[in-house]
Length: 117
Length: 108
Image 1 (cartoon, rainbow over the protein chains, first blue to last red):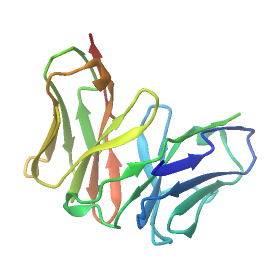
Image 2 (image 1 turned 90 degrees about the vertical axis):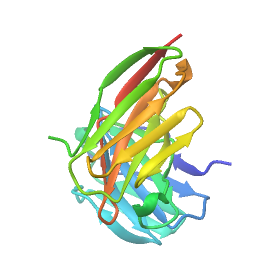
Image 3 (image 1 turned 180 degrees about the vertical axis):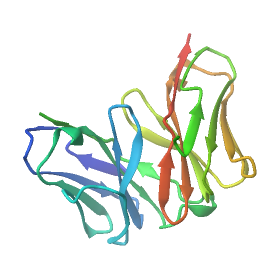
């Protein structure tokens, strides 16, 4: 059974469009994350949600809006897509909200490769 | 300067060699993660440390909090270990900063 799943796996779209990426985890975790990996393979955290509540919102444009309908899902909606949004987006989850104490392993989804033309 | 620096950036090793990847960070942290990203793109969490040392199979991770340094060791390396290894530090409530990764290639 897939622990953290993302759809779609690949997304090719035109500039200016609005698109969504979905993420679901069946691990019963309380916290979910969105990361962006750029063309140089550098990972950056974008958002994290704990029990449907926004915990982290890094310096991400307002065009990116996460939505958590329940704690098993964290979707990422992107408005007015730009060329610079092309990247691989990873969803992840962890049991609790804290990364301290060496007890919060994160489980990653397979990634969604977004290409904006 | 990135808050998390990894070395080397690229590493090529012969099968069977002992490998060390280093991670230095400049911020106070509550935990440090080692991640493995396969050539296909999938990311797997290898270790999470807040002190000392952890071992899993042929992989060993150590951390020295005073020196703000961690190492990932691979004993008896194998071609299937070829991947990008990423160090990530967790400082403060949920703030995670990633290193730029070390690309490892193990040649048979």
